[in-house]
Length: 115
Ligand code: 5GP
Image 1: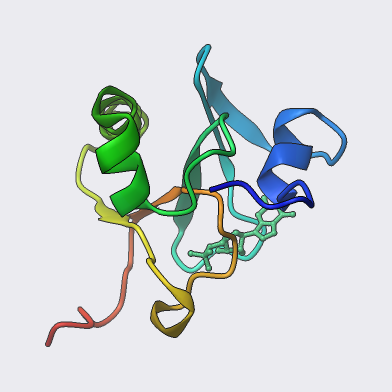
Image 2 (image 1 turned 90 degrees about the horizontal axis):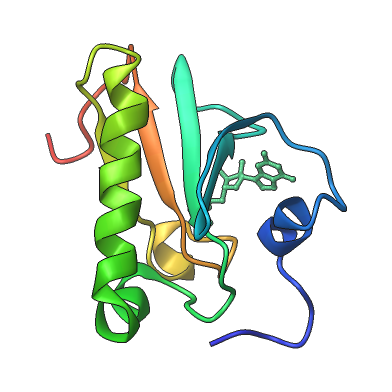
């Protein structure tokens, strides 16, 4: 659930902090990651701060999760349509912003971490 401090993403959504925005709907925003880990690295973020991670979103608003995936596909289609979609969930998994977001990674992705 939301914390007392607005997340960095809430501050981007409110335009308090600048970001390179690539898409926006009434419920989502997508912008370039400030520290890209791939040639194309875009974050898709629900505007609501109510969900800390994808599991909370799936329970609380599965339709919104579907919107995240659909917008990711639309954005990826502009870059060839093949991509990795990552939701880091929990600190030990590398999550640093506890406002649910999907990473779209496209291009030279290096080694598959499952390998
Ligand atoms: P996480 O580690 O929580 O899965 O992903 C958070 C992502 O947000 C990181 O990839 C990080 O580079 C990105 N990020 C953090 N602060 C900012 C910011 O101020 N602007 C943008 N565009 N991305 C940010």
